[in-house]
Image 1 (cartoon, rainbow, N blue to C red):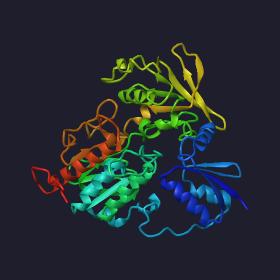
Image 2 (cartoon, rainbow, N blue to C red):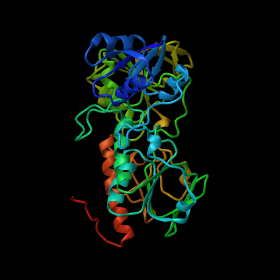
Image 3 (cartoon, one colour):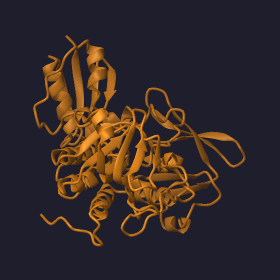
Image 4 (spheres, rainbow, N blue to C red):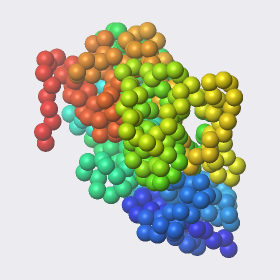
Length: 415
């Protein structure tokens, strides 16, 4: 009989899910809680893994919650049926496919993207009795969804994964009547009173539109980046910085976000290499901000070309200004490059955007087209945090409600 070792952490819902799955499959397991035992925490570090759960079966590692891969490996055909209203049900149970009835409907609000901004807008809009539809091509791939640990979201005392947090908001919105569908928006026609969103299956029509696409959609992966995501490659210091206490990390980027994250990581890591591929930072970012941080080394015109590792993450291959390529041995690397630009190309020239693709909005998150709003990572925000994106969603939903009902002022929801 196969036996498993599960590396878990306190407050991790997916750790509980995988343990329940193993029980249902009749697989014995040994649990190693990295929160309670620093030795287990160090075990994962030594293996080049920086998230939980991690399940070992006969030496084979399954990082994160991967029930289908584990079932295939174990030869398991069925799992227990999830309980109704179980807060840990899969994302697939929230999303449906587009149907002919949806193409006949004219929605009050159509939301592109189901991250914290889009999902929060759906909560407010659906609760305000607006006919609401949310479209997302990859609900489990957003910046928040791939974050393995959230501990600072207001009102959520326990540590949760990013996917668990955003799915809680989605379930809340669905409970109020919002419809969630998995599809891509290929192009738009937004200038008319009835807006049109073209999908591969057909055209969705709506009176208002909220563009809440994430900031990782255009990410062109480096060699090795996908393989070591969660095992050394990260995109959020707030989420993963603590995993690199007293370790050596790299930050790759040329924008204000990269600068801010390098400083944030310097509070944990003993050494931060700041790889800047250009001669200067973009926008208003000022490199003087790192002055006083003796553990940050700024490396101008150093472009990360590859993520290096065999069985575990080992570092990055970097091209220096003279063209020479050298390997930096690191414990982790954080990317804030082009992949963190919003995926707004599908909008064409209808919506005003800046040079990086961020949508230009006013204080009420209105775009240059009446009835069209943008928020979350689709616009430039002071900081990229889930709570900021969620606030955007609330503002947009109330703005869309005012637009549909021809009111000059927003109508807050107090209770």
